[in-house]
Length: 270
Image 1 (cartoon, rainbow, N blue to C red):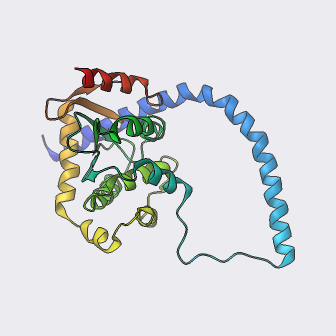
Image 2 (cartoon, rainbow, N blue to C red):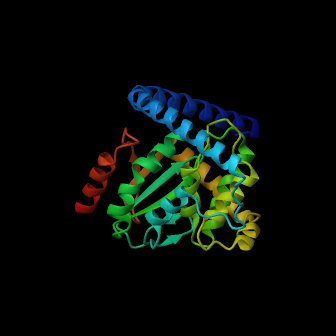
């Protein structure tokens, strides 16, 4: 396949995945309408309260100082609680002796991946990964990120954290902090900010590892693996017994854990 044909195939895959995501988002939008209406009234009240507080501070001559070492964000604290103490190696979360493996193909800017990561993964991690029954491998597949270089940069940043056994902190933080699709929010400052939220990450080593050609090779290998599996959208999954041949897993649901749990339980019993 020529470079031009390969680029065209990737572009077609991204556009197809984008269409699929939009359909999913539209289907879920109706469920969100009532909740948003309720939130609206609360927001109006909150804005009024904030306005009063700002006026009081201004008129009293008070102010707040910027911290030289910013406190950990609420989202990063949630991630810490979720995965702290669980073994990590490279792109893998969970012990190598876990009997079941889930390969998760995602794009860090994919909003449906965010829904899965926030809605389903916490249950799987607590119930199966933390107990040594499941290991999860994160693999990249470009679908939502429009600029190939941005996609490569953000994924290598995650893999560079993985060189210190902390890739999943970066990945989870990214999804928890994910911005609006196509808004151009992924900048070097954004990536640096995420790295600073990863507990115990040696930033000097992380910065150096980002130029490691091996990590760029892993991104390309993921793309090939996704192509071999016939994946053209994210999130996509391979599931099976560790050390065996993994099979395509299509849960048909990205916010409820039950289909995933049923499949994992079947493998554990089998």
